[in-house]
Length: 386
Ligand code: GLY
Image (cartoon, rainbow, N blue to C red; front, side, top):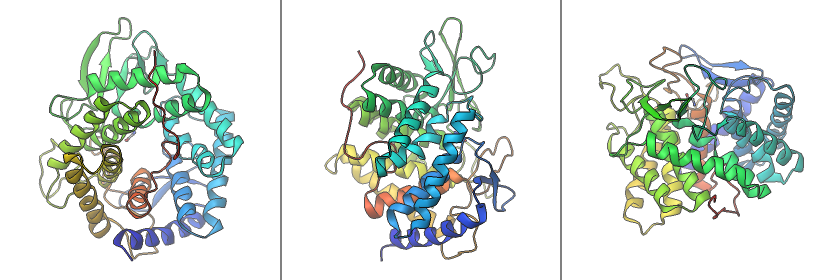
């Protein structure tokens, strides 16, 4: 049995028990090193639990995973109907890994319809004058009205997918314009990144880079870098765009070259590294998935692929050995030492449900070649918006 397979088997045991422990509620983050806090599908993170259940259902011959995954999608239907906490761009995370996953795996028409409704909700956050998808807050919001954040690169695959499904060009236009603007303003020349960037909402003029959860405005928050690695790689796949792929690869090489000895990232590449500096295991799990996605597009013959494959495998192996709860069925989650916000003192050293999801996705990519639910497995859009 490979090390990946063994880690998946261990993850299945914990996830099976968590179905009972969570009892229909949704995990978000751990608190003070303890178990997950639970909610009724009100957080931006609820889709990751759904995605984990779909991944488990693909791997294991156990109907419990599929039944619970389908139940979460029914819950996401209710969240849509009642528009519960929809005032943000993370609609992409929520519905890509829940209803879109069900569509990809089961061709369920209701799931497809729900996912397209989610794409339409995300489209409402497009600000034509500035040419961005507004991450947070209401239109015209003084602080966030002209602000993009790099995390959004994992939300726009929902729009690329909606274009692929419907042929409606507005989805593609918005996703492509947002991706190109993010590439220009969030990614720096050395392959590092700003977490966020501000534009003047009235004129659309670029104002400045900044951060929300990072060490400093000009620093590189490691999870933001990871969102960029994976997000630009997915945009490259949908747009069939070598420049976008090159951006993803440059960001991935920056990430790889700035890792500490155990190959798992601290929370910010510019935070002084001491014995007390927090890690973000989730950043390394996301980055590993992104690196494997990049390699799948570059091909083995590209000289960058060897370094990225080596880093992805070494990081996931370190996550298994040094950061996971493998071998402990009573553990409340899969991956320890994630940080939601070190800067804000919010779960700085805890379980994060997105960390668990990407850890499992990385394992599934390595063991089975299963790439999660960001794109259809047999269809790739090659058109660009006019
Ligand atoms: N997208 C929010 C976060 O990464 O914390």
